[in-house]
Image 1 (cartoon, rainbow, N blue to C red):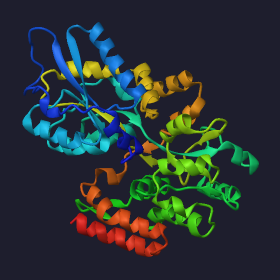
Image 2 (cartoon, one colour; image 1 turned 180 degrees about the vertical axis):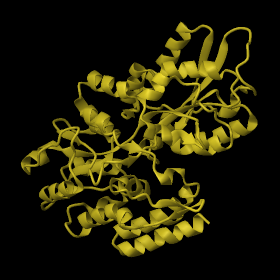
Image 3 (tube, rainbow, N blue to C red; image 1 turned 120 degrees about the horizontal axis):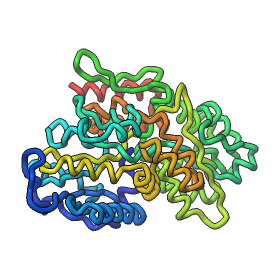
Image 4 (cartoon, rainbow, N blue to C red; image 1 turned 90 degrees about the vertical axis):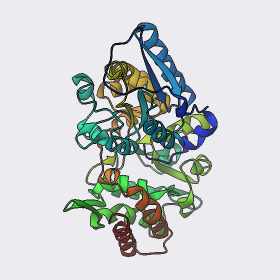
Length: 429
């Protein structure tokens, strides 16, 4: 999932964390015959009330139906799981089944801590998920995670303001082009009201995700090494957002330092007509919108395509688990279409499975933007920056400060490009 999110900030307060160091060691070797039922530990990072209930109910149901394979639910926390996993893997006491995200399991995959699932999961499960999504959890030819929940970038809009401006809501499978989005933002701008609010407190992931709309990848392989390049394709999204801020003045400058959640009071108060943001923002619409407030979910904006980077939540099996086959059986059950749809609904995200998507739309009757959410995952795919070892450092030290300066109108587009490229040279040497 595109991190850090509002969800993670709430997680620390909402979830009781069980340290992974207390987990019983899985033990080395492949599946072994043992007396009694096979015992598995499942580390889950679910934290929202509905999501927690679905996870626990599925584990309980599995245990009732499979006395020979018993799964213990272990509660983890997004804020601390990486360090805890690293410690448990190095100490040989990792859980059998690990819930995490595609962009973060690569490190553990390269170190040999996660099992290759290529021959463990069924062809049916493989066929439910697009190759581009599987690629996000594939490292050095090994599939080390089953992607099951996706987060896409959509647009949440104030329906009454759209109607007043004569702006029609596009269908779920046919969103606006960037030109149309910018033109409609202009129509929705008037004294005291901006057409859009770009929450860009943490701009790098947002920009690099949307850059794929124009085939902008930023990270390029050259002779066995990776380097940052900023050409016309990479400049397109920053330029369009900057134009909305300072040329058309259809986007609010004050939102630049905000997170998605920070923009909600202004959105509910009619100050911003549209909020480009995560598909999970719909949850705050349902839970926090004032009575009578009408909102709609608009599909992803289209450039040359609607491609965005996918960073799905994943389920992995520890290489040291003595019960890999049994763990894979549990994954097949846990992620069958009906269960995957329920997990996605509880987390306000998009299921990776095609049938799960269909079932979710039927389950929700397309309400609360679920039809748009389901369709928004069509063009999600792996992006080069997600697989670049130096990306986190480049993002923190160079990209985020440079993008913040550019969006604050303190440097030019060319200067932005120079800073991003120079930062890449420092990090990717």
